[in-house]
Length: 88
Image (cartoon, rainbow, N blue to C red):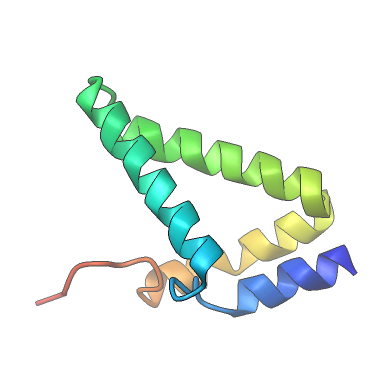
């Protein structure tokens, strides 16, 4: 069941209309801003956030389900699923 929950999440886009997800995204964004104000590079913050996120997914869903989720990331990235700026 837990693996199914992760697969369903992987199939959906990150719905910022969900109150919990909107709040969580806001907190992560604030943490990034604070890290940058403290002199940390954005790339360093991003890698640390990914590591923490994957740790949590593995703890919650296990290695296999998390690996399956991660397999879909290249396609989502290339399709603009994480792009927030307009392409010219």
